[in-house]
Image (cartoon, rainbow, N blue to C red; front, top):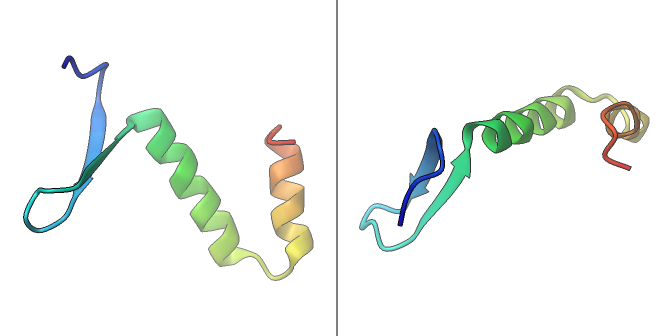
Length: 55
């Protein structure tokens, strides 16, 4: 299996379960987590998704 570019992997301690994400996917995911963590209301989160073309 060839790795398609730069990837970030998360594995359990025994390396029996691993998930890989492209750097772009991981960066998008961390942006969402940051917005949710900093949001003061549901509207803040909805505004982010509307502005980011998720809907």
